[in-house]
Length: 342
Image (cartoon, rainbow, N blue to C red; front, side, top):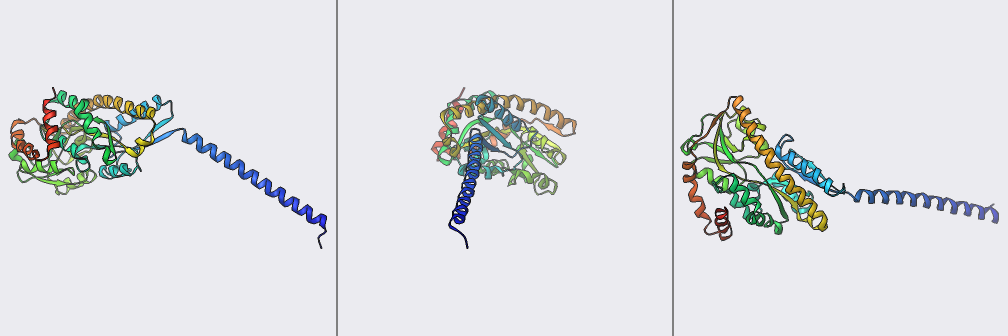
């Protein structure tokens, strides 16, 4: 039978043990909170895209990350996930809309299905030359189109140069529009790209970029269209031995930020992100120009026939596409304004 003194001693021991447990838990909680606070001082932005790490676009994103770290004094960081690690371009746009991914780069052709204003960039022979193209992107019209996606959760912040798109084929070269008759040509998921191929006499076939090499090998399609670096780096030249520089479109890549993320950033952080993106765009243009030269040289060395056709017959055959936009005043007005840019 326990005495009163013994019971009191036992109670004191229990109380002391309880206080020790509470003290340990309190210290652990403080350490955990301190760790979270330290981590929260760095804003990490997750950025996904679909290209290989050797691509100049990926290199430009890494440069953007370096500039962001430097500008923010290491309080912001950009983690880049290439090669569709986070999803296809369409999937990345959907992830941006819900805020699961902070930033991405997609072709404006894919954006057509999300933001109507981007349709204008898919029109063939829209730009007179490279100077005109850059003047549009860097000017008032280009900035207006970038902002047009905000209501859809997609804020554009800059353009990356994706050069001109050209046809490449397996069994016969494309020297004139008539050479496309009956050919199955892979296109992006873009209504405009499909309309263009049809206007030129081909059969448009949407296929995911990652599945295209096999589709070419198996004869599911007879060819595709893209810029020189993408044709070379994808090794599609191993299947397609003809590359025709008809330069039918100059569809830009668009760097986007989720409005979910953008709205969470303060004004200073937004400036850092925008400045880093703008500086990376200038760097990307230099990388791209070098990549185009190197890719064409490598393709010729690999035995690919580089064809430089007269582009006027191609432009004439697709000119009617512009008239189909008369009943879409917003896009038709953008066409007029782009053509007026000096």
